[in-house]
Amino acid sequence: MSNAVDHPFTDKTPLATLAAVETAVEYGIVADRCDILQNGSTLVLRLTETLVARVVQDSGGPRQGPEWFARENAIVKHLTKQGAPIIPLHPDLPPGPHWRHGFPINFWEFVTAVPAPASSQETGRALRNCHVALSHFTQPLPRLAILTECIDLLQILSSRRLFPEDTIDLLRPHLTAALEVLESYPHQPLHGDAHPGNALNTTRGLLWTDWEDAFSGPVEWDVASAIWNARLLDRDHAAADAVVGAYEAAGGRIDSRALQYSLTARAAVMSAWYPILYPHPGPERQAKLSHRLEWLRQTAPGAV
Image (cartoon, rainbow, N blue to C red; front, top):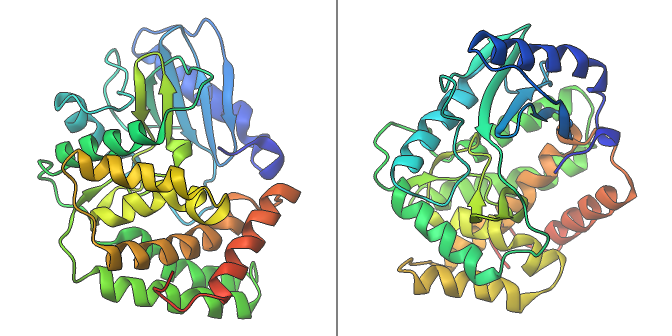
């Protein structure tokens, strides 16, 4: 989850907050609080006992307009009807996305997080349940969008000199190799950014959130996203194996080659987005970036 020290967007927060409050009022909901749950490129506000607003503050970023929220809303509405383990949109407002003062906004039900993390087994099962529900989603999604978008992003990073050229030259072959290989596997709708921070352990159980990166691709991409930190950052192989095992026990099938290419591509994607998401990274984030880049230097594209 982003925090304010990483981002130059806090000067936009008062207007972004006003946009969320005014939109709620337009539909008869008066905010009785304004608790900031997250303040970065996306502002997350709790406005009432049950209502949470998400407002995109990064108006100059690579993603412009409400297209991403519109896709997310359609998927979340479908998953809610399917009974999937997700945080739902708030039922008292139109799904939107809404647009006010230049900010895209959508509204969610507030859920209560519990301190204990969800088990790896629950993470794998919940991800598989989401994939089953997503397999019935019929609206078209872009194929391997996060990879194609990231390859385009490298051009932005280069032109703005946000990364050294040797870093960009390191990331590009991992992305292009994965794109070529993963294109050949069966595709279905995916979460797109299924890292553990988007799986919240709540009083309702483990719930997946943040569906704006959804695209069509092999299920191994989401599995790789769920286990990358455990497998390759924390070296917690037991936890990573438990996620995979629970996913397969729930009926999922994982191809080892597709998973390998997804793991390396996931490292490249996370690295490429760092200058956008964390323009002023603290020591901990900088250390994680350095670890990923060093791991990619030592890893041939697709090999783990």
